[in-house]
Length: 235
Image: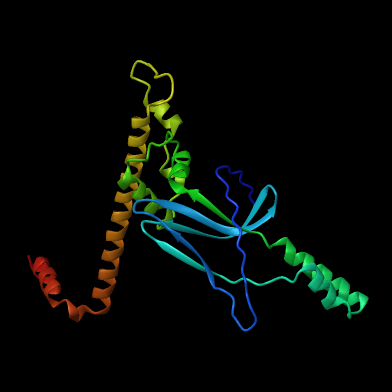
């Protein structure tokens, strides 16, 4: 398992439900919406202790997405109701019921964790803080490469060691200090452009391979191409 330390604003919400006999309980749903050109990671789980959060599910919400999660709630009896309900049971059955109730009470505190993706992208790519704020297209391209194509971050991030070697001049001069934000951003942009070019080339090769397989299996579908090839052979 992996443990991650997070900080930020914390909010505690309470909800009191009144239910009368013959009425069904209210149906609750968790709804997460994202604005255009924004993205966040929504984690749903339980508060396992005063200092820990145990996530169970996660989803990425971005670009006007709307995520609706129905919440299936169940009512736990009060201590007095529970004591009256198990009073007629045997000692072994009462012990089992108490253990089961204790297990239920451990997971009654529902928790939601929201992680903004753009600041995390900047940290992963070795970029200064807020450097992607106005880079909308670059951010969208990065999200596509990470989510759709599963590209490792090492292939897209700014590498200070490579930049340090490139900064050495022909006479052995070196640049001292960290590279400016614009230089780091251009390096990442170049990595993204190169990766997109490679993916586009791979798509073209795959389509060409599919076309060649289709021509081989169904040669009568492309008589014109065969005529051209035969003319070339005659010449």
